[in-house]
Image (cartoon, rainbow, N blue to C red; front, side, top):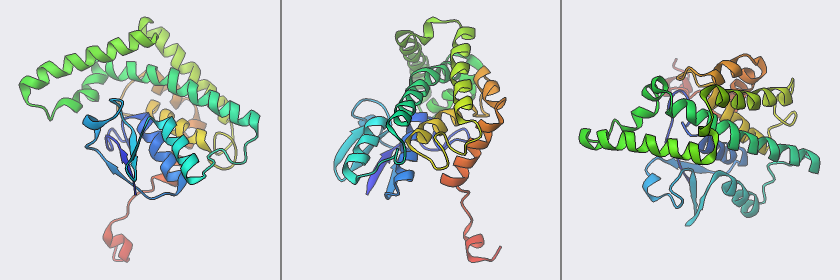
Length: 243
């Protein structure tokens, strides 16, 4: 069975990492059996999650996970799409991953109020002296990542404007369709759902959330994907008909 190494549910999301959410969505869409393990970060081959273990073969990075599933199990996540539609899907995927993602990271990690409501909790399990050292160190590292990528060189207002442009473009492309490319989910939906759900996360007060909430189609889209792939778990009593 495939093991997906993840962080686990947090902040009302299946996972705080959009990339982990994307990888899990791909596994759900594939129909392959899998399990999750939240104890794998220290062994992550590229120092990041997600990664999978598939019968002893380790595959890091959500995009390479997708390619692995497609090649090994003969899955076409973009079945039914013509070459032009596949190109559009790739372009939107990279826009969300390489633009909106960094705006989300900035809002969660660099805004003090949002940091206290979210990422700071990652460190609460550490002994107090270690926590005092590790928390600002990791936050500085994230700041350096943002600066190196380029997003962190902008003002908060400029960062918001860039992220909102991606949100608006996603809403425009979705339009009245149930899924990003039509009547059925494709590979792009694994990414779009993960990142739009992250932008809509109610734990954080951000310009990105406000922008996403202005698009009724994006809110309905996330609800539709949640209902399809993360249906509420019924209790044992409900399943037996006793409740």
